Every structure is written in structure tokens, then in C-alpha cells.
Length: 222
Image (cartoon, rainbow, N blue to C red; front, side):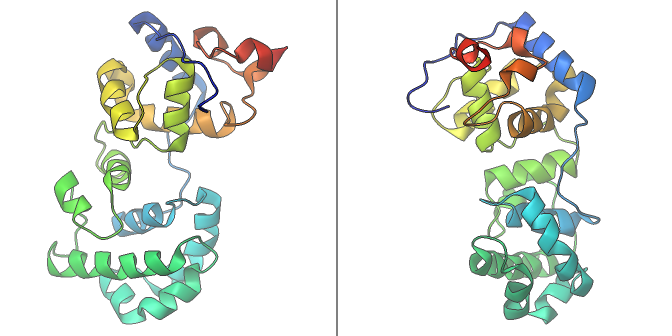
């Protein structure tokens, strides 16, 4: 949602349920990041910050040829990790984070990815959004990682109204029906990524058009 857009009228509980019922009928709630192990997922999500999943998926195969464990990353070294991921934005900082994560995984967490927010966020490069993704995808917890897509979609169509991602997260956790809460993260991200796009939302082909209070949707369709 841009600053020029009017605020959407809030959707009521019946509309919200219908909205998610429809999304759940055709969206497969899976991450588009490629990963095989819990550590793969943590690394991939860290790499995806300010970067597309497609770009991450192009870089990680070469990295994972060399590194399958925390020890592997530590032995491979920060410079070599940089060389593998230099096609990704902020690759120098991310390589440093990967080394820090690997060290904590080995020395503090007995080579096991922790299953709670505090421990996850104690690792370098892992903020609330990244922790929420890991908790949701890896540990099946009903968390919401509010990225730019979810933030835009929620504000734009009337699911929630807040100025910060955490504000949106708190509202959505209360409003989304429990039956849809765990996969809602994926429904909203994928809806925002492929249909409710930032500049040119595809309102004419949107399956939840009838349950959207986007103030400008008639302008987009006409």
C-alpha cells in the first residue's frame, strides 16, 4: 500500500473466513525456497532478506555442494561462502551471519536448529520475520512472517491496518480463523507475489475480488 492509497474498510469475520477459504482452495501453502535440512532452511531464509526466492535458489546449490552441516560452513570459511553467494544482495553481511549461525548451532544448540523464537533470534541475521518463517515451515507453528507482500495485502484489502509489520502480525493472528492460521503465511505471500502485486494488482483475475475492500480496485479493472 502506498501513501497515496486510501485506507481500506476493514473486512468482517465472515468476509475474512471466505477470503481464506477461497485462497486455500487453490494455493499450495509451501515455501518457494529450496531446502532439505533444517539448517538449509535457516540459511535460505537469511539469504532471502531483501532478495527474491528465485535468486536464493540459484545460489544455494553451489553452496550446498560444499556445506551440509555447521562444521562444513565453519571449515569452508567466510570468504568461500561469499564467493558462492555473491550474486545475492548484501552477500558479505550474509556470509558473516552464516558463520555466526553455524558457530551457535554447533557450540550452543548441539547441532540442532532451535524450535523457539528467543533462541532463533539470538543468531546473527535472524530477526523476527526469519524466526517466524522457520517456526512455521519447520516446526508447524501458527506464526506469520510479515514481509512486504503480507504487509501490503493486509493493509490494501482490509485484513488489517497498521504501520509496522509487527502491528500487522498481531492483528492477523487474532483475526485469521484458526483452521487457516498455520498456512495463512503462505496464502498471503503467494497471493501478494502473483496476484495482489505492488504496482499493478491483477484485480481482473483475482479469485478473492469479491472479498477485497481495496479502494482503487474498480480503477484497476476498468
